[in-house]
Length: 415
Image (tube, rainbow, N blue to C red; front, side):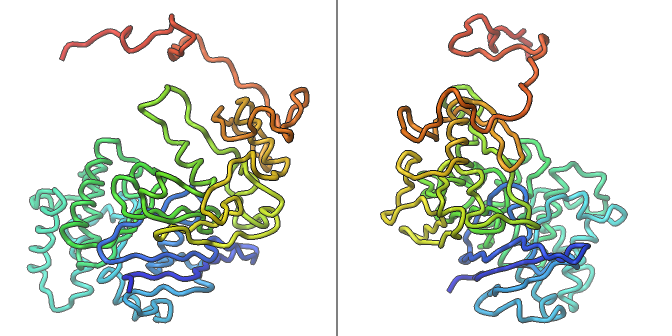
């Protein structure tokens, strides 16, 4: 049995005018003891809301409308607030996104880390709690001499270490990291991720890591779950999903990451924005931005299907043999053709009133495809041309501009 089992989770928010916005819609996930799951997707896809629902930390206007959250087989959604409060932090804890916002600025950090210990373990004395906090500080790489300092006396990375120590205070089995490295520089981010990975191994923690960075998931997680507009798009082992994603959204996310070993160019982007939960689109919610969208995608919600070892995907473009069919094999709708044409030409394409540049990554209509739009008719072109680059900005060297400056042309500074 998995440590955590989430089935058909639906989370709704009541808006100020009384309307209901469904932010999470039928998400399933499993997590074994000691396993790390990366929850990825664009902003507004429901990642943090899913995590807050698991920990029962939704705001006052949010509620779990349907579904179950089982920890060791017990349905946590059936517990009242008092009973669940006893499980929070002892079984499930959260590393919040903004440490400076999560920490009380007028209380010493040692007292804040000791607070959950004193609340959940009433027989523990203050002196014993202080000794444990000192041990936690050493565990996360902070000197115990800093127990009596305030949050403003710590750097961003050190504050995040304090938050990790607080999350571990009551020895939970499941820790949820809600973008714990946001706003940290690259070096500090690497240190925090290395710390989380070490603690997971040493303490046997199960970890849900919410992030936008697929490279972070590849380095720290065992499995990946891709969400889009509140629904599961694809999930599977990290190696399988990163090596051969089946959902067009997963593929676009991977191709939006710069390739440091390849040609120097802007990575492929995804046109448009995720739909608002207040007015979700019909069928597959990714179809307005997808270069493989068909008529079926507009009307029918794709069923989640399994292909191989714990690899599941919800996409009409995936064949029964478990292969994502190329765009040229599919009877695509006009919006998909427009996105594909923009991908090959580099023009701007309008997607649901959003106009964004699309990289010239060849994901679209192959040359000679009979469904390719006529060259003399602009498709999906909108918006004014981009302004010229200021003369003070040096261009990047390309294969056709041998005179552009490179790093070899920069002045050298002796160490």
